[in-house]
Amino acid sequence: MRIRVLKILEQTMADGPGFRTSVYCAGCKHACKGCHNPQSWDFNAGEWMEVDDILAKIKADSMSNVSFSGGDPFYQVEAFTELARRIKQETTKTIWCWTGFTLEEIQADPTLAQMLPWLDVLVDGPFLLEQRDTELLFRGSPNQRIIYLHGEPPEDVIPGTVPLEKLR
Ligand code: SF4
Image 1 (cartoon, helix red, strand yellow):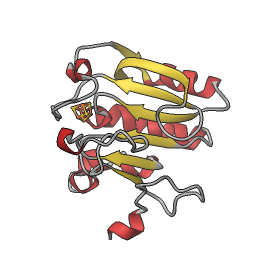
Image 2 (image 1 turned 180 degrees about the vertical axis):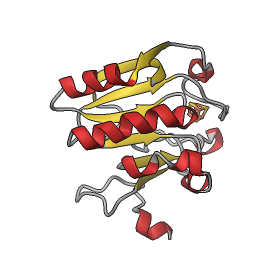
Image 3 (image 1 turned 60 degrees about the horizontal axis):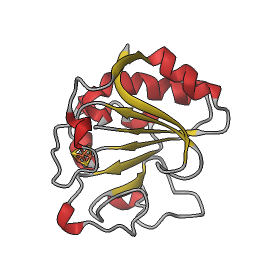
């Protein structure tokens, strides 16, 4: 199975807490006004990479956790689900995933929802230029939520964190 990848950043600290291997994918249809990376909207940008090869890069760094960004990984949900499942089954790494869909939109669509069991944290929702706040960590506007999908966040809670329990 393959993912259309824009780039893979190793040992970055920009996409979630601590060191992370960030997989940036090609393709996004959300068209948020003021998007930080409109070049990423093109589904033909970047290059195809086998899930096996991405996983090998991730495993080669024993220290870093993992982030999925783009573009929007949910437009390649089947291949990203395969990658996320194998990361969770074969390593102890955490996965943060950014998307322009809201959690509720993802939960309402069984195809999109297949990735949720394998993610630790979802940063959801479109970027809203009129609400832009450069003080926010790991997101551009306050409508975007940092959602711990499976239980309470760790002690050093990041402002804006929404444990899933509070959404029910
Ligand atoms: S979801 Fe992200 S990549 Fe897609 S248009 Fe919005 S800000 Fe840009």
